[in-house]
Amino acid sequence: MTATLSDLLGLADRTALVTGAGNGIARATAHLLADAGCDVAVVDRDPAAAARTVTEVTAKGRKAVAIPADITDPTTPAAMVEQASAALGPISVAVNVAGGTAGVNKSLLDLTLDDWHRPLVLNLDSTFLSVQAEAIAMVRAGLRGTIVNVGSTSGVTGAPNLAAYGAANAGVIHFTKTAALELAPYGIRVNCLIPGTHWTVGTRAHMNNPEAPASVREFFTKSAAATPLGDLGEPGQTAGVALFLASDLSSYMTGNSVISDGGILHTTARPAFGGGTAPEAIRDYVGTVRTPHTEEGDD
Ligand SMILES: NC(=O)c1ccc[n+]([C@@H]2O[C@H](COP(=O)([O-])OP(=O)(O)OC[C@H]3O[C@@H](n4cnc5c(N)ncnc54)[C@H](O)[C@@H]3O)[C@@H](O)[C@H]2O)c1
Image 1 (cartoon, protein in one colour):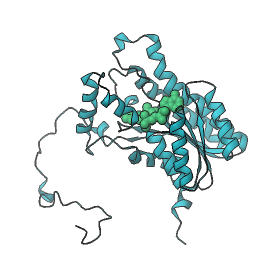
Image 2: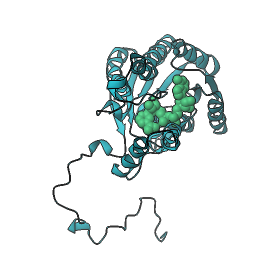
Image 3: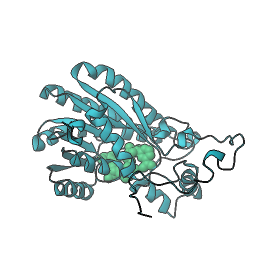
């Protein structure tokens, strides 16, 4: 008998918790988890955004609860897990997405200690406390579970003017490895999704902010132009990686980080050594690419 996609994912009728799920990559992940059969606890500091995602998840026929809360409050992680489990049943999937630059972008030479701490609290403290609360709840409920943390390519490469955000996300990537080792004996897998730059509420706000220095807008336009796949990402293009890491399709993976960045981390400022024209083997075919879904006679 052929296995269904739902069988392969192994997510049907599980309770998932997603932080930051009012917008962006987390919201798109909440949609996919619902499509895969999960009920979803939507944690976001913006109550209206959380409520919108709840409406979207319930429209897919799954249960959902909005948990308006600020992840930088150290009491939030334990409280969100408790509220999610009380409303939807014990969680066995958690995707810790909420994070960001905390509005800190300046040279390390100008950073105050408070500037340095804010991205650490938003990205690294929150991930530590969330994983701790989620894992304790899963073990106490007697459930095997999967946890997906979200880092950033700024935690993989040097990140000029984002020193604290970069260090925090490097910390998320490393913490994921340790958490994977400590939690494996309890049947909990922990992996990390590393997005490159995406078009989301946060990045569009920077792009459209007339007060932002031109260099900020330039970061987005130059990054888009330098991305091998042709543009910055859309949340829906990366949420599938979170779903994969949360699902049984990755059941032998733990402690790993998966990059979804349109290929930009593979690029280099060094120019290509020669080339410049289409390879001879495909010269006559360039520009005739069809997707596997293109029906005969569609074009
Ligand atoms: N968008 C990018 O270019 C990009 C690149 C690399 C990494 N990331 C990471 O991906 C994650 C999601 O980013 P995004 O761009 O999809 O987000 P987004 O800006 O589209 O949405 C973020 C959501 O999180 C919520 N949120 C923010 N701070 C919160 C807090 N303290 N407590 C609770 N909720 C909070 C916001 O209300 C919002 O709904 C972040 O951790 C970010 O660092 C994003």
